[in-house]
Length: 383
Image (cartoon, rainbow, N blue to C red):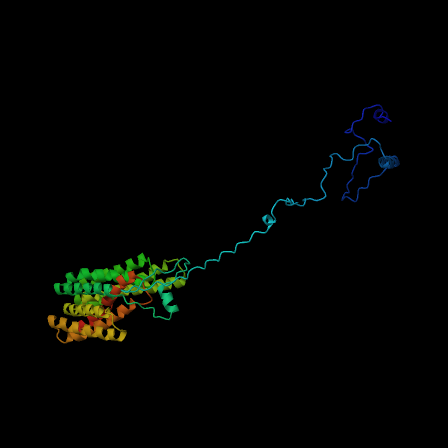
């Protein structure tokens, strides 16, 4: 039977609609209340269409709309290796010797820098997670004392500043004012850096301003009212330090630490004005004694020997200066007292491996600043 006879004289069209082979789908519904009624003729027609679909059709609609591709049995064919030709030497296919791995180069151990023969070396503190450790940490790890004396250069600067104070006191009140202002500036800056607070511009400026106000109050009130002027300025500056820290947005612990450093710096800077309120002869003898003390302490001597030599040098310088100024033997006592105060200030500036900046500020100023109360009190008692 030809295609025209099977399809009623029409040419065969594979894309034509044929209800006998067309699949229809009826999906289930969630609506359980609606049940459509099926008529008998519809059911009969459905059964007839199903039987016709199951019967073989010689020229039915092709079952495959798209021809399937023929895939090999193995998704990934096995790789084949060509056999060596008879004339190839057998050693050409021998496994090449694997070279031995090169030994890994171990990092060379970092050696600690050796100390220079003329003095200790200084390094910056660790602030950003660097593997370097500070000299203080290395000293503690090795069981050594974290103390470094300022050395000869800061001692020489202290001696120069002390001689300027002595010469200014011999000239008069205003001759003493210029080296005293330099001493107060070094004290304010050095104390903050000694406590690890840098930059602390507000605290340094506040402490230095307190010293200048104390100097102005002494000049206005006179030498006989030096104690009320110094104590009054100190009380006002403690209140100002409290106000400055109350305005800070730092943590409570950090604010307390900053408050103590600011108050201590302001107190030392204001107390340095005691040189201006003391007797000129006492200032001369005390300053010369401090210069002799720090120079003797900087000599390369053992600890106890250096301490004794420093105190003897302070007493001898006090006697010599007292003889020139008319104090006599009282200059030895004044020189010994100021020498002890100078050693305390020098020890304070040597603590915890400070930087070179600390030695050139606090190490220069603190011996003279710490001796100011002794110069003022003993000068009024002995002169």
